[in-house]
Length: 123
Image 1 (cartoon, rainbow, N blue to C red):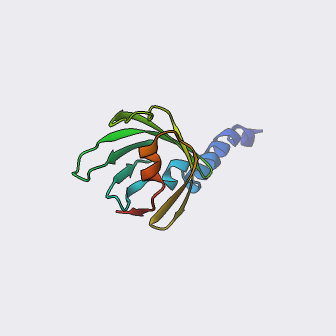
Image 2: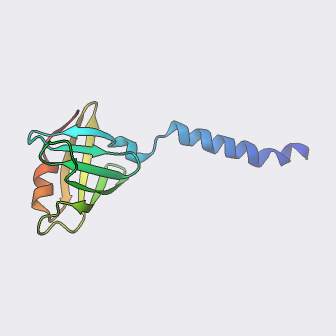
Image 3: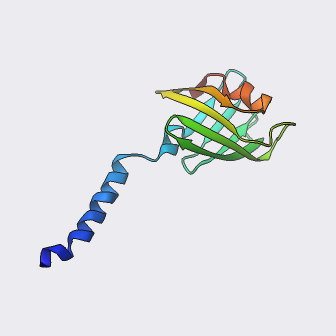
């Protein structure tokens, strides 16, 4: 009976250890990336991102993202927001080492589509 008192503590320890073994889905995209246009995309593991469109070292746009499996949803929050870019963009992605590729699912923002669909390389 005394051993049963420690069962919840043991289960909590196993749960926490399991979380450490399986990284958060945001970590799949986290990093500083650049594409052939010179756009720099800083994707943070906390679900936020910053974009430097003119590669001058300052952020031109920023927002939040969510990841479910191999699908990312992007939502701009501030900075440069061209006409038609107030909605969310949804993309499938694949990462192989220092390369990141996206495929369009749905996005009405032409500027975001143009940038996101280019190949990205770790900076």
